[in-house]
Length: 232
Image (tube, rainbow, N blue to C red; front, side):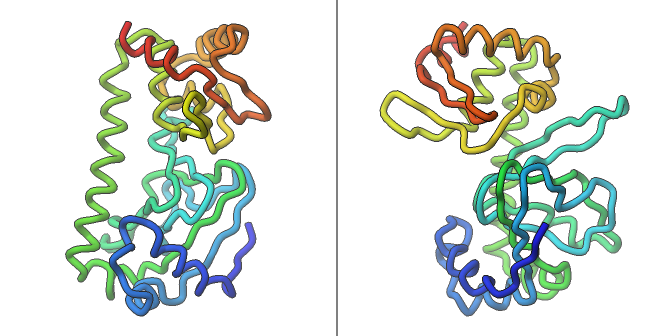
C-alpha cells in the first residue's frame, strides 16, 4: 500500500462527480475530508481488517473493494463489492471504541480516500443531509444482499447469473463487462456455494460462448442468455 497525500485536492474534485457529494461545495468537502489520505492499493491488499480498532473510514475513489468477514469455519463470507462513490465504515465511527465489522481488500488496482474518525465526529454526523445519503447507500447495499439471500433456493446457474449481471457494466448494446478481477472462489464465497459448482457452470458458459474470462476479468457476451436463467 502506498499513501499519496499530495493528490488530496484532486481527489476532492473527484468526489464532486459522485451522487452523494455532487451538491456539495469544494470548501465543504475540504472540511469533511481534512487530513485524509489517499491509499493506492494493489490487488488483494487489505485496507481495513475485521476486528481491528477503527480509526478511519473510507470513500472508494477508483477500482473496487471486497467486504468480507470470517465464518465459524474460517472461510470468508463476502458481504459486498464496493465501487467508486461507496462509503465504507462511516457509521461505526460514532461508537466509543469502534472495530471494523468487515475486512476491506482491494479488487485489482484501486484507490480509497481514508478519512479520520475525528472528521466524522466533528462534521459528518452533524450534517443530516449527508447522513441521509449514507443511509441510502447502506440501504441499497442491504437490498442487494437480501436479494442474494432470497435466491438461495434458486438453481446455482441462476444465482451466478444474477451476481455477474449485478456487478457488470454495459460496454456495448450486446456485451457487459465486470470491471473487477473475480475468481471462481470469490463468486462461490459470495453466494455460499461450492467452488466446484461455480467452476462447472462457468466452464459450460465459456464453452458455449456466453462469457469470456481473461486474467479473472469476465465479459458477458450474451447477457440475454444469462437473464433467461433468472426466469427459470
